[in-house]
Length: 371
Image (cartoon, rainbow, N blue to C red; front, side, top):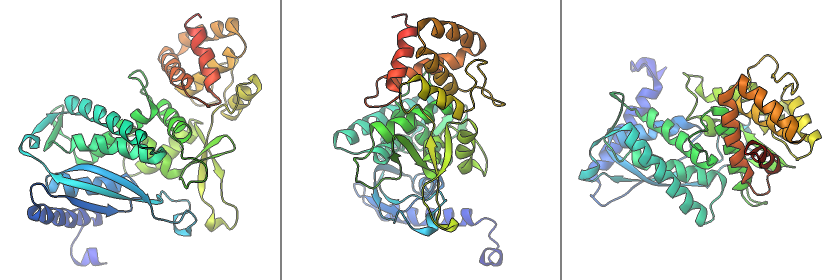
């Protein structure tokens, strides 16, 4: 009603305008070597977009550091089934120096942001940070490079705050997944990022985390799905729900119920569909759960994706070199790009210590390379 009374069309636009005015005034009063520190509880990438729009685009500031702190109850009813994080973020801003007040070409800035994200990831890992904090460190590293420019231009078009936040999320996911340039599909990047951040770099048992291991299964909240897929999925107003819809449809994840009790108190969470052992029966069971026919090399009514192909290759690798070679040739003739990407995913997974899929991935690489 107040929006109508004051003739404001969109609440988001009004909020961004006020945030921009506040940041601009703070920047005006800030000394050249001073800091602005903001604190906010973010529930989606939209919060980062609004913050970057106000601080970078309107006040000409640069993001230099950020930390996440657990501040919310894991059991609060208001967050059940929603994309709400249990942490708040502290972000540090500085004024740009004269050299930073420039336009940058996207390809060059992206390369700088990727290297900075890797550097921040390594630094965070060395001091003992885990899962979500490693992702945040990588993302902030990328954001720091993007926001060090006044403008970033791609194909003659200036990137918006939304664009650079999306790019930062995409870079952070790639860094976390340890993905090579050959790994590009959303399914592959998401799958690797889940396994890496929530198993290889998981918090020690007994610490609070959004994503945990139930038995041996990786369990994700809807916010985790959004975070790890946001940079790669293009959509309109439904983009926050898109990751959940795409990856459940592709059988990369499946919904499970984590909390018992009244329906209002139940939170929707998801299990990553992966081999939980290296036996042939385990892989066969997984293929059945994912709706894949390993004989006809189809995935029901949906098209095969990279992770489907990876698990088919692991299934036949467990049956020996002869069966693997026959199926590999058949799959390569049918979907060569998926097979190439699946093999690259197997290379990444084969290096994981303690992952139940690592042995299967090593077999795939061994047979592909003819060893």
